[in-house]
Length: 243
Image (tube, rainbow, N blue to C red):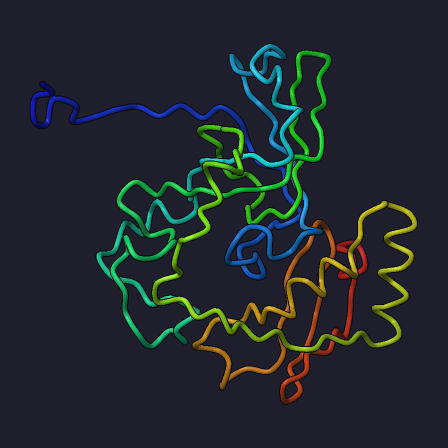
């Protein structure tokens, strides 16, 4: 029998750090897999950067990542939150959401495992379809097991299934920028921008007050505007071009 409150404090160790295309919170998809082109790496840290610790993991297509919402630690936790999918004007219990304002600030994402790189005392896991901020501390990794983790009779609770995507268009200059950027870096910037913006990443509080927005993807400053129910990408510039 386990004694009540026998474990009052427990230390969770960081096993790795996320290196992501998302260098700021604004624009990050609200769930994993919604932007398949969103890529990142987990770089394991000592003493967990050992090749034998990922032996056999390469045979799985997806993995679970447990991580820390490190940028909300100072904000504390909340008993109720306002989910963006409800327009930001209805409250739900924090345990009925995936809000970062949780008692232990732990997050969970299922992402695609694209590859594993080892060598020079480094172990890096290449990921796709991420919803993770650059610099996020990772506390655990587990393989995704379809027959156990994909529950066919699961319900979505208060979340609606009729999620409507908005159309995304590029002006000529940002479209040319994206083509050249992909040619020189191999990064599918245009597709990533489209996948993010079609989900309308704007906070509910800004949808009626503001029409021009921006976000950083890697070192690129992406600017767009909302024109009725259409999203138009107006500019893409690197940090050097921004001055």
